[in-house]
Length: 174
Image 1 (cartoon, rainbow, N blue to C red):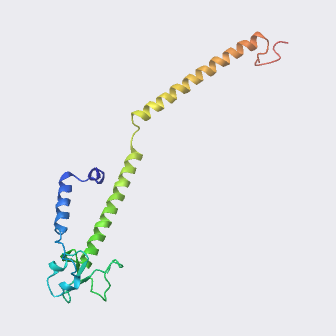
Image 2 (image 1 turned 180 degrees about the horizontal axis):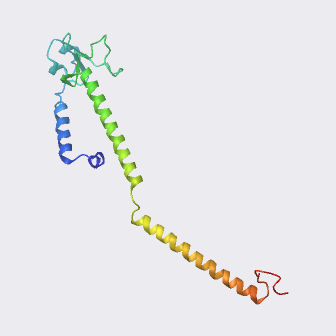
Image 3 (image 1 turned 30 degrees about the horizontal axis):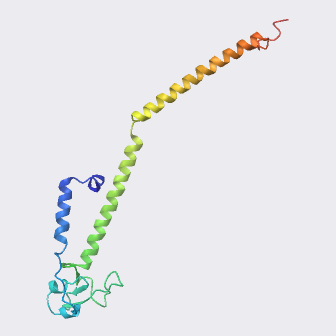
């Protein structure tokens, strides 16, 4: 349903799904209880990032708890270019740029789709229901005119009968 709204063909949906699966890390192995992120310092990035609450700093090979109160880790903790979280091969700078480009592309795509749909709807010829409504309205107008003319003729007959008919020239009688 969402792919039809965005105009994506099934091939593109499959391709995007495959890309997302490649970007997502595998299921992390459960961390043994009591082990903190600092235990993985000077080990490998993969070992550190098995725990989703850990942040790996490539610069000094340190594994630390992710600062959850902040969206991005502060530069005093680790530079964005060497900070890793989730997967080892994507740094925060690349992640921010990629997400910004993807978000902008999605917003631009939605705006273009909305503009195209509005333009198509505005320029579209009247459909069958519109034509039928206009035809019925015209028929009602014609019937109303006929009734109005019929009522006027009846009223004129009654006026003639009782001598109340307005003539063109009221002085003709005299």
